[in-house]
Length: 113
Length: 114
Image (cartoon, rainbow over all chains, first blue to last red; front, top):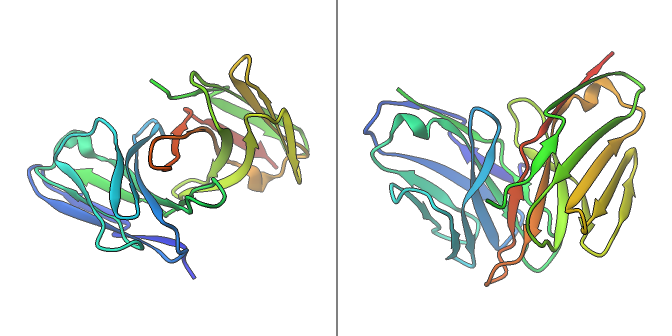
């Protein structure tokens, strides 16, 4: 029944490692997003994908790369993790032709040691 | 930055009282949305107000929008302990390709004391 799901929920890793966070939505939406929420709860958009094409790429390091194997999935790959990458990452989706609200996943708390 | 700002940053009230949160933003918008975030959870959409609307109601929620001042307010009436959460405003701007981009405010942490 979960509309937008993310795995894992928690991710603890060492600096320099490469990791991925997966996101899936079963709402039939055609646009998906990745957000980063820092320790002060500041929420900033990182990427959006519409019909498998990257539409918006905010000023994030190129160590971050979104990968969309199909319309229902938008995974986030992070290379050479740094301490400052520690945050909660949220996936969201939206139907571009419908209502403007976005549906958020439960978040993935990434801790880089 | 297109990020909005909210005030107050934190608000503590007694159950039954009304809570008002304000949001200011910087750019032209298609609409403005309010979201709620419970601790450790994702954001949940509450209400949307279009740029040509001035006020909107949904249950115990009332949202106002003043595009001339680039500001919005969220009023929660007859608050309940279960309303305790962080509340974020988000401005919706249209980019090429149709992928509406949400820019979130800094959030207001609401605590409703039973």
